[in-house]
Image (cartoon, rainbow, N blue to C red; front, top):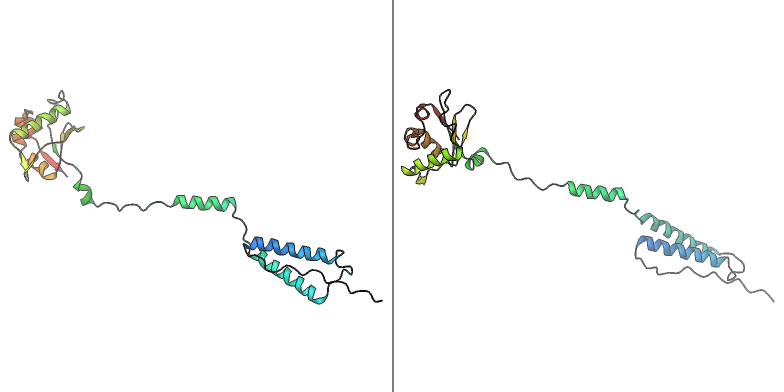
Length: 202
């Protein structure tokens, strides 16, 4: 009686789920290993593969090779931190630089009242007191420019002992310069101030 032919090894599984290239590669590799294990097990007493089975195995190995080529390496720590650093370096768009006209619109004007050399009459009076005296004098004569009451914001003593007076607008500073003989006398500031040369600073 002739022996029975050896049974074919089990075919590789089909219909793999394509979740991700890595998962598909793992499943394909497992199927190849199982296929080879079955071909040399007791299920295949002759431990041989015929041509079609070898072709199937080669197809599975090629499929595994293609899947491995599609797997991207995980991002490195350096790549992640570099991306975060680049994102943080993006600065918000800077506003446009204002023009001189725009700056001057919000900048206080001033008038410098020059004093003669050695003038010390106001050394003992504080800046707020001088400011108050000048504003009181301006209010007493209803000093206005363009229907706006003139009121000085502050004064400053320059190193040269000249008196710098800050106003809201340049026209107000020009009015103070043009009428300095009036308001300096009313403010009871000493006469040498009103007789000296002065200038307006925008």
